Length: 161
Image (cartoon, rainbow, N blue to C red):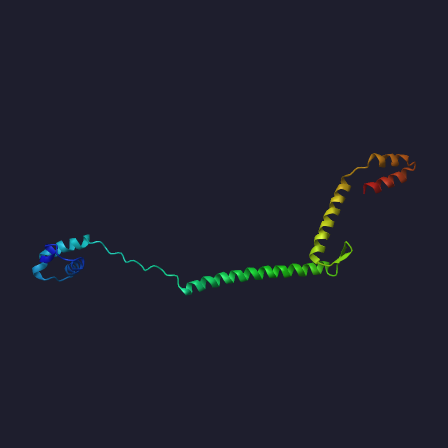
């Protein structure tokens, strides 16, 4: 106790003194110091236990790599399945079809599909334009030359279909 009072103790020795005075029973000759030592113990900073830095182990890397590989495999399988579905669909619709382009036979279903879709789009545009058109002046002049009203009406109907 004298060394403590003379400030000659190490931190470890002080910790042991604080622990001793925190016990239920203390040597009766040291009892007068109990309150003081408990007060000093309360002022002693609490040591923070540092957790060791988490190391990335080989097992962690394997786990990450496995997860990434699973995602890549799923993406590949999904893409492959969709491509196979598209090929089967094209075969169902256009199987056996071919085109002659510049004198050469083309039986690639994807090229055929693109050409057919382009042709259908052009045909729909032509139909739209035809439906919107009215008889021209030439048509009107030809119709006016027809003497038979029933024939003129029939030709007019045909022109407007």
